[in-house]
Image (tube, rainbow, N blue to C red; front, side, top):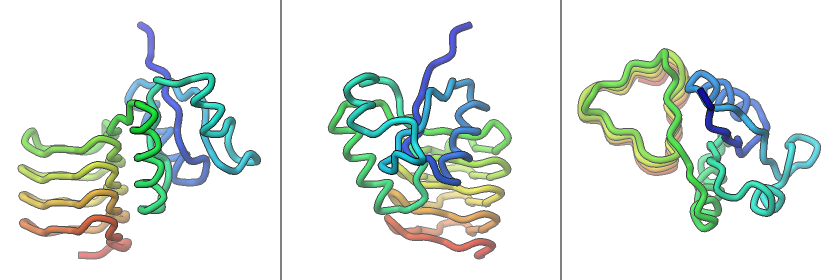
Length: 161
């Protein structure tokens, strides 16, 4: 069985976690794209010149930076998949937007909407009918009750409830 290659944009700590999730999802991580040549395997320009069209996952923790990179990738017609760790629990009616990342141990309950580019970090609980805005970040072990709306670019801290 052939695996799909994928690059991770961002070679820092968050990028490492996203790479692990990608591998758990059956992707082959082809390398890291980073603006810092000391960290990444290639720059965005090198990716565009040599690997255009290969999917890229968002491995950047900064909400606004993640949004900016997402827009660059979309302008380059690059697929930006959502990555969902296989050890998370996602209700059938929940929706995860393009470029979203759901980490291990997260629980997302019925009719929750996770918009594009949002991060649902390790062991979060997102209850029914929540809306998590574009490029928001819900930190590890945060627990959000039903009918909560988190705005675009918001950051909910570790253990918040």
